[in-house]
Image (cartoon, rainbow, N blue to C red; front, side, top):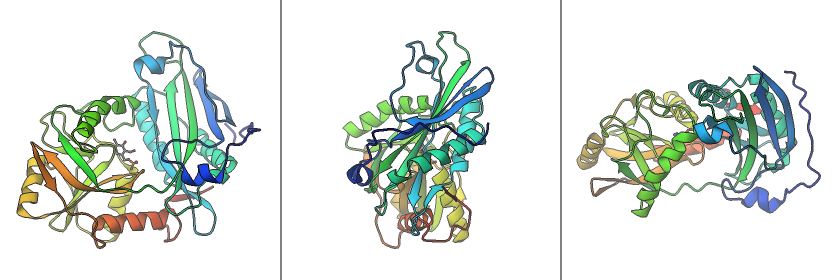
Length: 352
Ligand SMILES: Cc1ncc(COP(=O)(O)O)c(C=O)c1O
């Protein structure tokens, strides 16, 4: 695969300042998308075309047997007017780990990175200017064989499209420790960004929302005791001056924001422990007054302070929003790096 990707430009750009700067998360898409197809053991026809619907057979394998995965990360305008993508290679690596778990072919770097860079150059004007805004990047990869056979598909499509998003105000969230449903279990697909993981999580979130929570806090699949993730994010607690986060045990997603936060904490020489913690142990730290902070960590909100965790009929109320909180510090620091206002000492930015 060479780097020259044919581009069919739209003749009807939808770009307006309003759409670019004021779109709520995930509601509008930029003018173009990158598409590549895999069949006969090879990648074919990498191309940039106007963003548009696609038509498929009702027998599409992804619909029936769930060979479908996605990724999510962001591009920002930097202080000097350039556009930088945050850690795309980490998303590429995670995409291929998910693909391997779902018995799908690797997406080579030449397809992923060249397609991504060319797409962002084509739709550069869609990257928001406002502070806190970004262009969200959504790769999606799925089986496209027209067949009811239960086996890995023999055709696949890989698409990247983008969506401008306004500032994401991460209001403090309320979580409910989920004791009935589980997101993942040992040997399952919990560490993969498989589309099916999200379908399996929707009911629990919906039931938690009906009780006044924003989402669930997932517990482990075997004993329903160990804390795993915060709804759609990784989770971290500050207990007695130590940042505690569940380890990558195989059932939680390897968050790229989590990894970035752990790197920043190590730079700061802030004490960190990656260890399993039960919800009862957490409740005990709350009772002892040593639970100082809790927050979700993920691409969308970056850091989302957790104000409350519901568990067995009681709400544990957690302090939030102090200007000197670790959550505030980490969020400020990460945004400053993503927007080029602080040196990118870990080479996380890829300029388009
Ligand atoms: C289930 C789940 N956990 C964690 C994360 C955080 O991952 P990242 O920091 O790569 O966005 C996400 C978001 O992508 C997620 O969907």
